[in-house]
Length: 302
View (cartoon, rainbow, N blue to C red):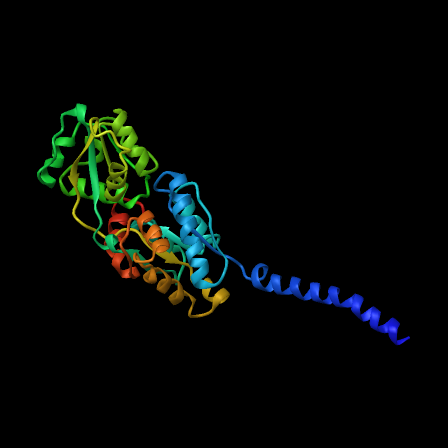
């Protein structure tokens, strides 16, 4: 009888052990809802997938929770996904960041690249136009009667601020030939001007410089003609709902993870290089007051 009981217990042991392992696995992964990150699609989707997937891997290690990158189709979709809670942490431009935060009480701007507190847009022109680099903002008057394309309608560096500086120079959108275009992203703006589809374009200076450095631009066909004054632009915005899910100190943990990125560590340097940054610095909602004011003036914020 004792032998029978003993052998029965031995048969049960693997089952118990297996059950314990499975439960632990569920607690370690499935029961922890992933932090979903996203970004405005301001560049080629394949490039964005690479850089934000690597960043998600880094954040997962630092925060000790699952982190996933979820691409979106356009700028409006990024704002909407943040509003309804489908995205927890989003890389927004200045304008979309303001739009998103106004719709989600308690949302916070937490980090930006070192370059984002003094950001620039650049105007480029097809060389066949004969337009020479402009000496000052008043020379933007020379663009009247030309064709112009912006990037996305909701882009800060590819639409909002270029339009603002045009207006300061006394140039209205109706002064351009035909309707002003909206390419959708900065890479497309470059290609459209390079091809001569539009004579002039406005875009993110960092994207322009990166594409030139990578020899992805034909400088025999297109050239920069004017650089805007500085303004605050890109930043990470986090949804307050993450505190209910991961704890009251979680937002600070995420901010610290960005500030901790170190160019001396090869894996982290790769992330910073992909994001065109030397480091990340803290930011706050109040830094985008000017962006909100201009957004309201041109009707992008109601």
